[in-house]
Length: 199
Image 1 (cartoon, one colour):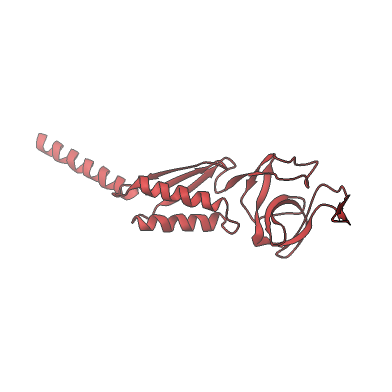
Image 2 (cartoon, helix red, strand yellow):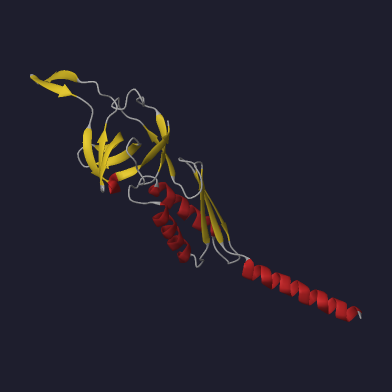
């Protein structure tokens, strides 16, 4: 009788262990706060988690400075990094602004967004191309480089950006009088780095 009980317990333990193996999914948990990245890999495979996590962190820092990467592309590329380590995990992204968001901290340079934003101020950006009229966005302009402006008009994929500072000044440069005013420019939606969500 004791042998049957022991055999039954061994079989039960084996069922539980194998059931856990089949139910356990490899996961990569990523947390982004706008400046810092934390990555934790959970896997039953023999994986160099330290190297994998380091590579994902480096990639994430690059993503925060890239205008074209959205959350879908980000997750796909993290999966590609994981495949080099022979794992196919579930990718979980959480952030200071919610799940599946990529926050970035940006520093305001200049006075073109006065009175809303001050020179040297930090703002929190949600890395998205989902923009609406009235949003403040960070964009890459062919003419002006990196800019932070308000969305004034949307025409398909073309976004018209304007400065909040409407003050016009005049300045002599090399004997020529110039009118100085805030920027107004059109950019493509792909040039938008993201929407300012906190300032």
